[in-house]
Length: 302
Image: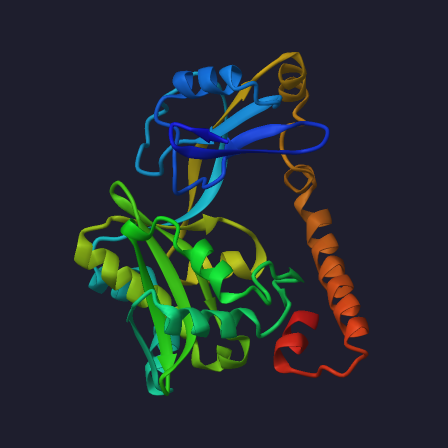
């Protein structure tokens, strides 16, 4: 469903929540108008939620508010990032990438680039302990999915011996940029391509005068460590919730509007996630009859 030219999606079983499909890349400009259109279209949802822009630090609305934790890097210059915001280990990782022949450059969004993207995606059906949603997609699907916000985006490719081994999509916005995706081949992890990609992204942002670089939700575990090592900090972004009826008001009052994973104690979640990863790996190995011993699959079993 389109509201103000932006796609609205509704998800949830017990509580149906409406939100922008492209959160972090599109934002609600006038919530009153947006809420009016949701009601006029008869969208069946209990709650509408939306984020405030990262660059807007003052609270703008009086709706029920909570915070979303995002990874954000403050950029003064590339030199400042290199000398003050990262440690020796991270600098050595970037240097290692160069010594091993990794070159990062702005990439053209063409069929050759997409074939390289597909090769990265098809390396393993499981990433970060769960089924990888881009695995085995055809080129046309990948082209359509990666063409979003193309007029304000830039692709950076990490190449080794002419082969694409990693890439990042940068989406430039009002005073900041977002890393829509950063990914590299698992078998090339010894070349530190993701560190090299972050370094190039910082360089490009500094050249364009972009002062904030957003890198997804803050996360936990190794994902959080990677952000910290590359100079990112936990940044609290206002998220607003607007009930659309009696049920929505009740669920907000009871605190049942957030995902279950957000309500579980962190200690319990840290025990559940490894079990989930092992289960997905077990299912994959069973389908493959135990014949796949690739490094990619081995990493996802750890």
